Image 1 (tube, rainbow, N blue to C red):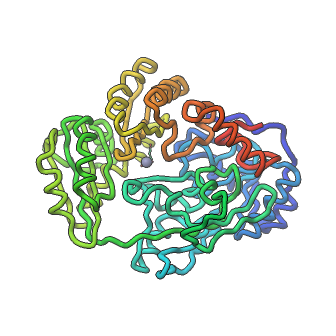
Image 2 (cartoon, rainbow, N blue to C red):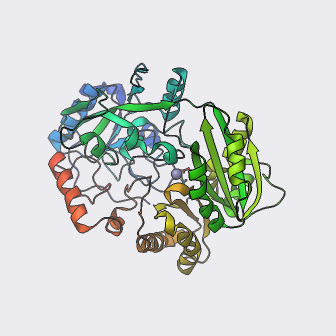
Image 3 (cartoon, rainbow, N blue to C red):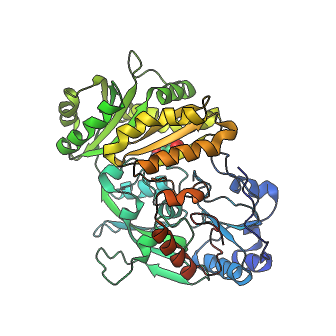
Length: 462
Ligand code: 2HG
Ligand code: ZN
């Protein structure tokens, strides 16, 4: 998809931008800007007026002041791992890349907190926390590229939400530059703070539409070195879903529960030349991880041993074996992308309706696009499925509409953890009431009256 530009071209303040960040960090040559202009899936692309690479908060502020002055629209980008077109230009914007904001503060062991720049990758943050004997509560497959700013801006979830919550739950403070260049800074790491509206929490999930996050103050969690990963072969999705409440009750150290299906397993195995996990194929798989201070293997084996619908199981106690089991799950996105440009839908429903969603997904999609290839997987505890549809061809929008209406009928969310981006702007009313959307619009207009920040993302551009 190559969305139309964001409207009448506002003057690009190139001179002021060069003054703000240095001429070498204002890129206009298409050979240099290209990698910022296409998203990871290749579905969303657009030409940027220029790419600006500030080094610190003061430079971000100067950039936004300049853009605000001329009304030039700004698209904010971190590691460019987004999947909903929220961080690539629609056409003509100033693309603000935050990867140079990569400073990491010393871990505050007493508080269990750390300050991280927007451009710090998740993997770097995890290594930094681990070196200090702690860990970070969010983890996801794009860890080597995804950055703190983008993770906060999308309220990213990932594989440990079951245990530690999403990105917003890790956020104890933030520094952000508002549309006019003014800076809001709440980085003291107060665990309790009852002084009114929680602007920091509001920034989480705002997708760059309310302010540009330049730093985050983050909660750290204990580093749990004793891990056990199990891959369960299940008779069907119903059995896998039915298992979860019992597991949560019996395994206080459960930290991940991921649902996979036979088509995804086959694709991943083919793409990565991975060995079969079991002697035969199974309709559904549940990947579980427990983490604790002492070895959780016995507890995990006990808890799943007599599960209804369990056909086979394999357990890994050592890290090489655990990585090998996680590869079946984590290589899904890459394997799908290797086959084609997918329609990617990230939806969630109340857990009690997840089995129904799984049952109705395929017929719903087949009715619209009989030849489409469906690869589904997800985070079972949150009722979150990643619905990837390949070979939808010109039917991409019809397929999107059919799936999102099904989700709305099941009282679900049309975006569970990837954000709304440009992809789902037109569908927001399936998950949010008119009153809620009006409140969001009022907040947006109050903080960004000229509409320069990420126009057309999350809410329609004015
Ligand atoms: C994951 O859970 C990510 O791996 C990506 O959210 C999901 O590729 C996808 O559809
Ligand atoms: Zn996910």
